[in-house]
Length: 222
Length: 307
Image 1 (cartoon, rainbow over the protein chains, first blue to last red):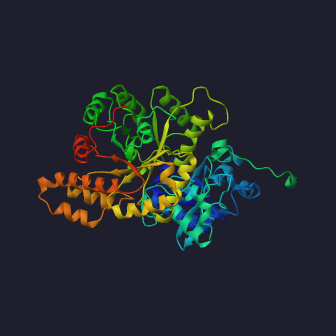
Image 2 (tube, chains in turn green, purple):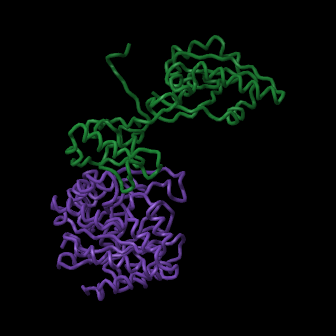
Image 3 (cartoon, rainbow over the protein chains, first blue to last red):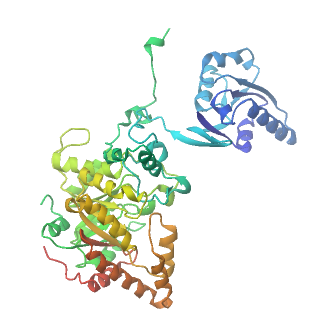
């Protein structure tokens, strides 16, 4: 899923300063799973903003609304009947959702209530961890199913740097060395010989470096 | 002989190589380099020039290399993958060769988190092994990574670093094997304090015959004080300092500690010279260049061969 963090209340209040009528828009997908921007968090943020504004004696009207997905236009369309009643949309979706809402309501300012961080997994209740950077050319078959691009702080493709110590990364003592994980897994799979192969310099055209990406499936187009 | 490198020459003649390093200053004053250079004159066969080591901004390695070159040294240009993509790297390789630099040390580079600009974006378009292959491709095939031919091959003697003490230990020789296959010709190791562990690593290296395909230069760094020894042990990732060395440093009076540090360094060199497959030493006296001559003399390395 896409993992995001809610922005600090102070920052959100700063963005909302000029506005009195706000549509606070949650998303039922990834940000709900990572407990950042779903219905529950929409309720919490709305209460926090109302309280802070009340303390300053400044009125604010907040409409709380959570839609199925902010990355699909048919769901974004669901707020069209009443979006005009609000001065601004405060979105709790990931960066993709926020932008798509902005594209659909061109005359309405759309503000981000979250910082979108990474593609990751739930390690345990309340803990998420990065797994993928969406580089567009997956090499997990060569690295024991563990991605060196996402999980090595230097994205090294041919093994650990000299800073790998007791399984941990030099960047942070709490952080696993991605290459230690790869080597351990290759051993478990009895594939340590795979490590001997030199992975050539990567073609980054399929990643962000090639420019904004688009995928077209002609067979699915209507 | 592929290049005009001093160290390639000495290695080819079967000699034992002595190198040291020089960290460029945090400013534009060339005198700092010249002063450090003067301390190493006639003492070593080549001088590494670090590339923004520990991610702290300094005068560029290439500029400092040129200043040392003008003084008659054979500098080793250190190059990290942290700050440059493949376009900048290949361009700098051509520039270095054009300016008469004969040696390159290919490194991944410390993470920017440790430096004075931790908010920087890192590059890592390639890793150190791919960098080795890049130099080899340009030099031996006369081609850019993009496949097109270049005119005027960069004749650089290709080096890299290895840390025999980093984890996972069991793949450390395999990693060196990858570097050798990528085209590395000499290796400078991380500072060695735990000679037994280094010997175990060398055993793995010899088992694969890697010591015959690249020259291993063993790295040493003298302790200035027990405080430094402790810092190396506890705070530098991938460093292995045995407790007995800390005890030994602790056992002498404070004003005698730097002397003891030099003594330990010379004894370590003596042991390393006896390890099969070691072709030289790399003396890294960090901000203590004036001691390199003392170490080299005590180790019996002087005078250096005139080529």
